[in-house]
Length: 248
Image (cartoon, one colour):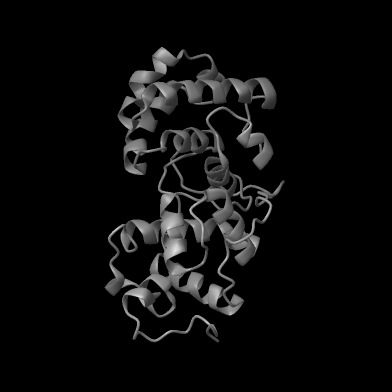
């Protein structure tokens, strides 16, 4: 089977957003929010997870390995990992000591090897070896938090999810979409701004924007969001601003 980035399966459950929390959203006009994400889509038409996978299990394992590691490095490790352990049952039978050399290039390899083993054993014991299609079941697995669960829901299971990583936090705060450094609060605020069918792609575009343009040292001259960006407005007080009224 050749690797693929996205699978399509029936929407069997919902990637529920966390309960809305106060003081996170900037209260922007809906038309302006839509315009911002439409422009992000136009700037990053190839937005998708950069992790290579063939099955929900492979994406789940790859996302666990991606913590504090680049997707490119993970993609260099997973072919050998999945050749040796192609599914949850095979991985559940592995010792952490067997996994550690395979995942060592991704960093924190002892912790990640334990997380992979625990995740696989839980899948076999509780879900017959299959990746569950709900946030609640996914975050109950060892090594799986909301970000990892949302990646798997949105990309491998066709269920709306909005992963929040450091890029999403940085870009969403700079633009002025949210006002929080807490990932769960940011997820709730962003989900409240968008229809569920846009959640996954919104995360993908924010991540790529953070990697390519809105870096820690941003490349504002390359960004189409300047007229509506709070960060840019603070740098350039005389710049035209359309944030209060939105765009038609």
